[in-house]
Length: 149
Image 1 (cartoon, helix red, strand yellow):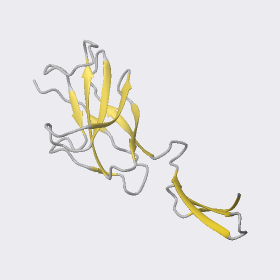
Image 2 (image 1 turned 180 degrees about the horizontal axis):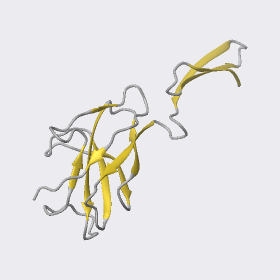
Image 3 (image 1 turned 90 degrees about the vertical axis):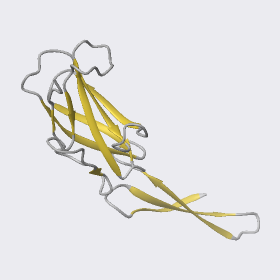
């Protein structure tokens, strides 16, 4: 079996490998294999930004990517933890074309959101906004923490 050509058809790292091999009857068999790479991670898109929280005092900040904004049907598809406000990076599967980012300041470090802890979501102020990942990696998705109290 011999790899003849590797073709990168997009900047997102989608490759086709063309393999030519022969079977017992000396008939060439061409196999095309498609695989996807995204900056060193198989099938992942990164979302980068900053958490802004001037009133920060203590505790980790947990950030999650959801597949839907609806509480009852959402699934976490990516998550990150940072020790204080600043830069964050999330990785989500490329199969999700729209992503919703939320987070909270875990003041008591129990890893569970409680009503007295500050929150953030992409789109604040206003309603949650979807992040379009169809073009690949996304940057400058800043999140501003606020208190619900």
